[in-house]
Length: 250
Image (cartoon, rainbow, N blue to C red; front, side, top):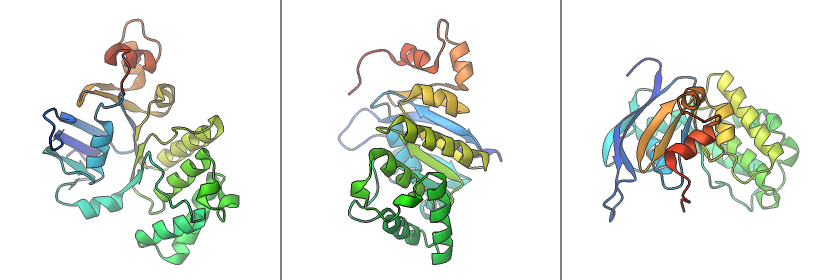
């Protein structure tokens, strides 16, 4: 494993029980330390399964993944301390306040009271959530839930942050604030692996991207490389549609 490589996916496959077709089909991919890497694709492409394997939620059928040199197959618990996961589904208790949710999650990571308090204040201040800490999650807007969901995955200050659709269903202001914060995290050395259906967002945010379809990686490179290498395309979205087609994916 190259010293600059922080995520290495080697010949990875996943076939769910009862299925003949693999959801992830022999993919290999390297992500460098300090990148914002976009894993992009239509519904059913295999992105979420890939991320779930990286997080140790599913075991691969074949192949392996190395996170900062550690095999996900053999070192699952150590890997969990290196990564922060921000799932598409809101992973918060609706009847608890934002502060209670963050305290609970921070204690699960083993954070001491003083450190936990400092980190809750630091992250919620940047994301404009300090005034809402004592409010229950079930009173929050979608954008507020997304921002607290993001804080929850960052409390243990992971080296790598994995985000599955972090800005889905939020207003423009919340999306802008989340994107700006991801840039700030990255400037401070955090590697980010990101999936989204917002191709314009991915084009401006990601240093490199890979398109995934039918369980395979079909192309990778910087957004500008992919655009310049696709005749007639001026945006990453146009490249995406040209390579994956315009048929609806449900």
